[in-house]
Length: 223
Image (cartoon, rainbow, N blue to C red; front, side, top):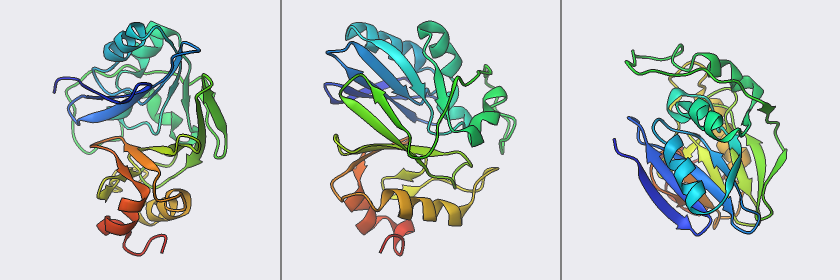
């Protein structure tokens, strides 16, 4: 599919790309001229680099919500182009060497292995310039080392494949666990205020309140 770019704010861009319509995000600090990327779908590296150049910023860090192939396919290319370190939860790092080894179907697509330089821990706080401060929340269930990034001041959540608008991440892939995923969502996401905006790894944004009320998978979670 062609790459689609959506500006959610002057300093936040969503890039949807790849055969699974995966969404990665570019977080900008225009004053500090720095940026971070969250997830790197297939075909997105060049678009992220172009966006950074257009806004006069340098990509300083590549953050991964998890390591399924569709979220990391261009991670090696973006790291090579920017020199930015890749950060991932240690429980998900093993897929970086062969992102298509643990899959349900054959994918006739090339994937380049990549190394992580940083390992994320639950509760860790990461700064992207001075305008973004991301709290790491470990949310296993979709994968063992899945994480969400929460910015309390900006009142946003980057949920990867943990939580979608009206749905949740699949748990039938290796490392998935439905009960664990529902507990992660209830304990780490639904405890946030209702107005927190959720930016998922597939589809459009939603809010914590909307998912608490209307998500059919969460009818009993967090109540």
